Length: 277
Image (cartoon, rainbow, N blue to C red):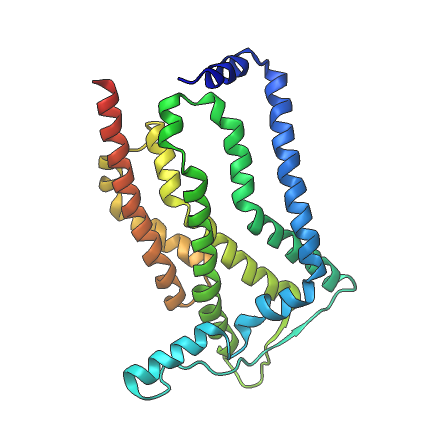
């Protein structure tokens, strides 16, 4: 072990509880400062973010709709999969509504963009408490977690959000009813669906840490695979709108991530067995 590493370990062991809290406080302060800085930048470019990101999935020229239409003509030489315009209007019905959701989207944007940095700060706080062998095995945890989160965000934004909006925007029980969505309803729908998908995609990493703690194992995950499928369907129905296509689209990657988690749990168990020899 390197001399500077030994010094870090000794320093960490000699720190009191209050000193650990002070150390954590500064990690949190730096994380909040980065989020706030990015949120300010997002606020400045708020019009661009709303027009080109938030409301983009509600337009028929959105990239997902164009790709679906191209696939439709390639497969069927017809517009079977093409999605037309939506039948809805967006309104603001409160005095400070636009300002509040301008601030909300700015903050959410700051959190999403700063997510890798936030993870890195917490990793720096937890790293001294880990053994050298544990540090080497979890070196890429920040990168992997960030990638999973961003893949989930992209999947939620490019797949689930536009298809769900298409279903809800064109759904009608009567010609006498006009869809008029408030900015609160629309923004909450898009951000909740996208963020929830990003969090759900962290499943393999969650299983990894649970396996490291000995709370779950490969055999346990296999035994309750069918139960996991039921939970996946329930979770998908909660996150997505009440249309079958969106639920299936989210259920499939969650199940794949669960299967990846089983592989990860098996590797953790094998490594634990090697360490005990």
